Length: 465
Image (cartoon, rainbow, N blue to C red; front, side, top):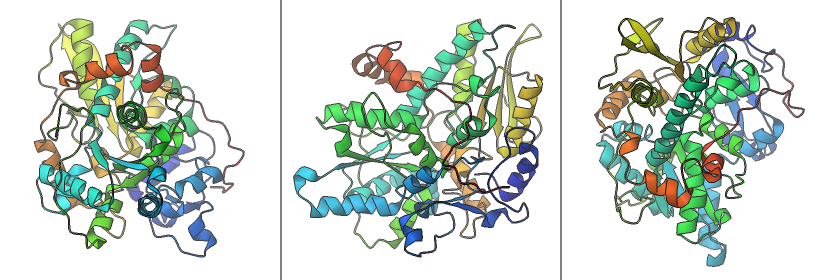
């Protein structure tokens, strides 16, 4: 996530924004600070590697969430968010009776593919096929990309913004709407900031959460499988996706946890580099039987799923009948805080912003709490430069940002064709056949969430700042 230097700046501000933080740290040595929770590795006396959440170590330089955000129970659960657990299930499938096998499904985030392409010097399509072939050589049954889940998340965000815009008034402060697809930011807002921030968080589920339901409910029905028979692994660019898997819990819709295990792109690349398997490239699977292999695509964001651009265009059309072709970003405080406006006859109709990185997040929250907030919508991401720079992939062996690698990844990502979510041929099929309509109770349950305000966890780790 954010760099250590940026984190140091943010920590000084944090005290004025929420309850006293409860992780022990020295601001001059953030890279070596961790919160420990019980795990099998620790009980055996093993020393966890730096950045290895498999050993339940959360480092402040990796994770934006703080203020006792990691309970002892969650720390134990994080020990399962690891390659060890992934291989445990693979090996069980090889040893046990077929009636006890679990179907292994891996979902890959679009922001992870440029990392594999840059690391192995491949085109993004070849990198996708190489990754898919490798995973299947290990024993994975299906490999999907999460673009369709991001489509649903963006469409729900668009609808919510238009609704909030109509509802907003001096008495009912429905705006600004703050995105909640970034789990580091969402967890920080829920666990630390609370009111007046959480009412402004978008209630559309993140792509990872939606993908969990697609795999454990929609796909499970297609395959005639009970959800618990599926072991769903997500490959993602950042460590906070592991925490997000814990937040999802068990869905009432399908009675199972959406993501059973989250591996960072870096963890998967390490497995690939250490393997001596003979691998044949394989086409990525799709959720739809009439499509054998979908082309690699992305949404309109420099390093993210592009909620800002898609919501902006939709709002301009729905609210003001303005068709926006090109979106012009204007950098304000720094390159990670940018503004987009829709103006007509000298009047600003819409004012959107993108705030990336902990420093910009803190400034945003301060303005919101002071009531000096000019924006209708803000895309908030914890990582500077967006999801591509997640600490689970764009870093050197000593834990610093790998700027050269990141530049290559950004060039690769920018060359991937953009496909607006509205143009997906299968979205209406999902809404009608799976969810029984876009506004149905089923759609509400599967695609929407709530954001609780912070409460002191009785089982939290009592380490003082």
